[in-house]
Image 1 (tube, rainbow, N blue to C red):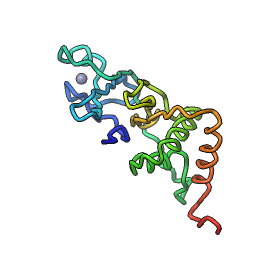
Image 2: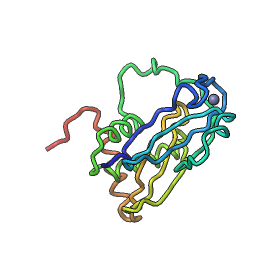
Image 3: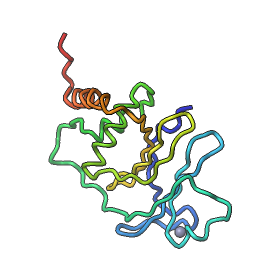
Image 4: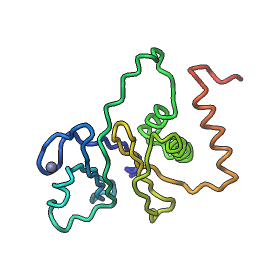
Length: 173
Ligand SMILES: [Zn+2]
């Protein structure tokens, strides 16, 4: 059901012509609503985007430049939990209990310019579905904005800080 909890990587090749995307090249990405209420991501070269079959209305679309692949983090031998690794882990867990924490993490990464918001649409069941793209990898995150009240945001931020600060230690009794 909660299919919005999803990370959708950019395809390696164009959906129509099958050409591989090149570094520094342009790519048009789009999300299409599927019959089961989730979203399918497709990536196109700009020329092919205009050639796609008529009648395909995307949920959202955006154009981006293919960034260089992120460098392997060899200066970080110990795998530390970062806002990004935590976000990926929680999104994959797909637990509705994490909706607030996930949203705050996405906002944090947007402020750090690691994520870019590509689209936002109100959901019939409440909240706003926001589409974020990871600048370096092109991965798309579908994130529900629970429209937290201002006075609730501080509490969630505290949770996020605790989650990021755990470092494998057990919380004290
Ligand atoms: Zn193409």
